[in-house]
Amino acid sequence: MKDRVRAVLVTPNDKVLLIRRERPHTPVYWVLPGGGVESTDASREDALRREVHEE
Image 1 (tube, rainbow, N blue to C red):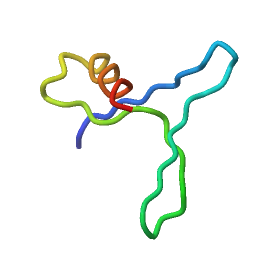
Image 2 (tube, rainbow, N blue to C red):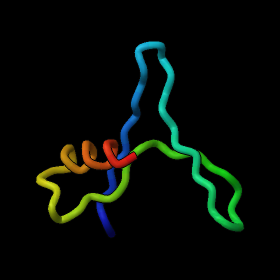
Image 3 (cartoon, rainbow, N blue to C red):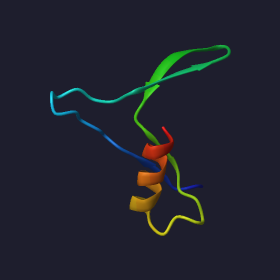
């Protein structure tokens, strides 16, 4: 199983960042920013920074 990371990002005015996902034959759903840890990531924290930047 691949390691995964997620972030809860809260703005100064207390709003949370969520990502809307749309896929064929699946109801729309929302996720927190994040993704898989790659072999090139030095740590889970580095993976999280990379994933948040990609989002």
